[in-house]
Amino acid sequence: ATEPGVNANVVKGIEHSVNANVVKGTQPSVNANVVTATAPSVNANVVKGTEPSVNANVVKGTEPSVNANVVKGTEPSVNANVVKGTVPSVNTNVVERNEPSVNANVVYGTKPS
Image (cartoon, rainbow, N blue to C red; front, side, top):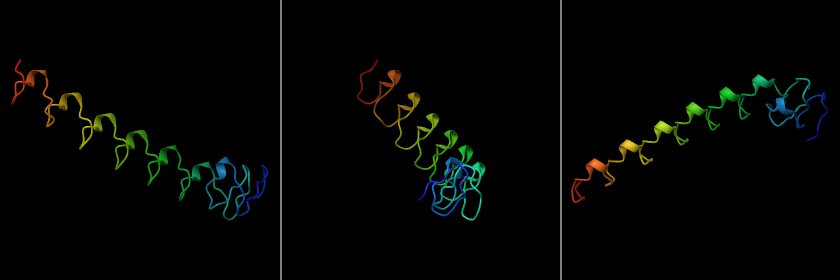
């Protein structure tokens, strides 16, 4: 739980710098020596439980990318909102909702045009 200097050696349980946040609990300094349980480089931060890189954020539980947000439970894309229970598109609002379109209002009990 100590805060190392810029070039401090990485020991277990110390606070690491921004690019060193990929080790079990330790936080090495920016230019810290890479010994056992130290933080890997910037491109190595896609390890168990660490912050994934920009293109790696479509992994279990992480924030999905823009095109990957049509996965289980995520926010659907604009064209994907015509799925079960979602708001139908403009041309699909004449389905099982009793709200006929302008030319379709001559159906069962509605006012004819």
